Length: 232
Ligand SMILES: C[S@@+](CC[C@H](N)C(=O)[O-])C[C@H]1O[C@@H](n2cnc3c(N)ncnc32)[C@H](O)[C@@H]1O
Image 1 (cartoon, rainbow, N blue to C red):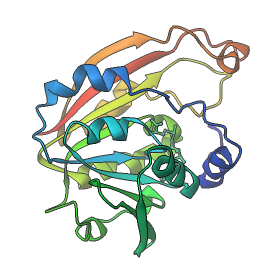
Image 2: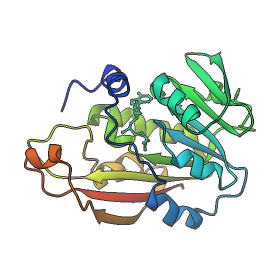
Image 3: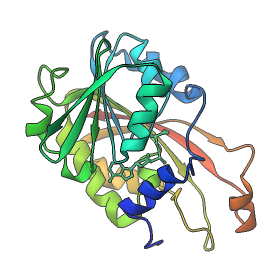
């Protein structure tokens, strides 16, 4: 396990523009599978560890209301500025809330492990927490395994009956490569969530071109996996 991956690792990534994970265009798996979730318009979507993901704009354009959560203020500022969204900021418990002025999108700035339902209850977008839909790309793969155990517990807090999630992860096998991105085994997801959720593998695909960082460590194959998670 790479012990260097803590909050300061991520603050540094944003300060140094080390953003290999960021996508310029909306995620194709989200686009391909979203309609299969049958999420009604105006539903509230949670995007944990959202970075400045353009997928939030895609979800907004599907008529949904968005609550993101991200550690780095640089990421959130970049998100609002790059998408020409005006915003205001206010404190909410240990978080800073960034609220768009004329579109239904709010981003909580802070550590996800400080999130409690009482803060969500105060968000104007949420008529009643928890969320209808969670869009979770590249969050688990950002976290070392010990911390992931805590993250799975959040799913149990944030999802109630009829909540659904689209979870996107990667898997690889390597003794030399130190994440992030971390490999998130399918059996870990199942054993962590199966007591309260139905978990269905929607698809898997080999990453076509591996970056030099992977190849230099001898890593030859990475598989992307997409899961549908539904409260039992
Ligand atoms: C691999 S990136 C993925 C970003 C985004 N989901 C995307 O698809 O582009 C992980 C993000 O999680 C944020 N992050 C890491 N640990 C966090 C924590 N404990 N609480 C909130 N955000 C965190 C990082 O700053 C980074 O932006």
